[in-house]
Image (cartoon, rainbow, N blue to C red):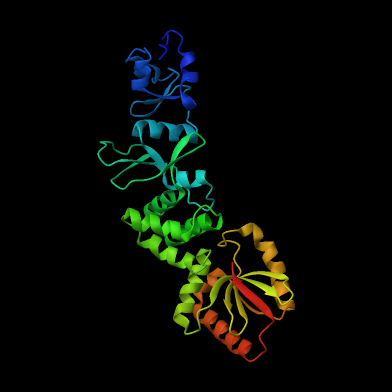
Length: 317
């Protein structure tokens, strides 16, 4: 490796990805071992990010520089996981998380510090390189993010979004949980059961739980309806095929694709024109006035049963 002239420190910045370097690599290049400590003093021009890891441009690090620092501190074979890895795979519905979660082999003596969260594990993982950074596969990233969060609605959103975006499947997420035998996955398993049934949002999950207590037949979830001549009417949140009853959770806040809300309103008009009876419920009712929601659903199901079933076909979305 080319040795660096310590009198010309400016060249160091271009020698390290994202201008982040470890003490070991600097010394290997010929830098005085005491120089990093001196340069990290006020006015010195460098910033100490983690133990033995420095930002050679000084100032506050970017998110990518923080990630680079954590991976360097974690050592060879480490990989980014959790929320940040899931985000870089393309998952959108994720909680705010300023930490950098890294996986390292179980035998490595390394502690979490500052923004860096270290998880030692005996369970193997698959690593993918995305934008020059080693990430665990999207399934492991999502499961690790869920294990650290444990909020049911947050886990529902992130897992459902990964499935909806086509980044993973319920089956591949289930394999990650079962095969890796990861601890702390009770919430993940609950949500995977919901998503496997077709639930795609937190509010729909509340609705699913309510129906299970209601005595009504179990509907299909997220069903695409078409007219007899094949014209698409859209996807309804729940569908009782025996009587032709649809249930829509009219939610801007909780739906995983809020930008589609206006299209949903147009869909309701098309359903009405096709003769489909639709019950509309807002998420707040599912938590605050379940008795009223059940009365509406029961009455609508009974009413739909007295009318000819609309001539529509239904398929799982």
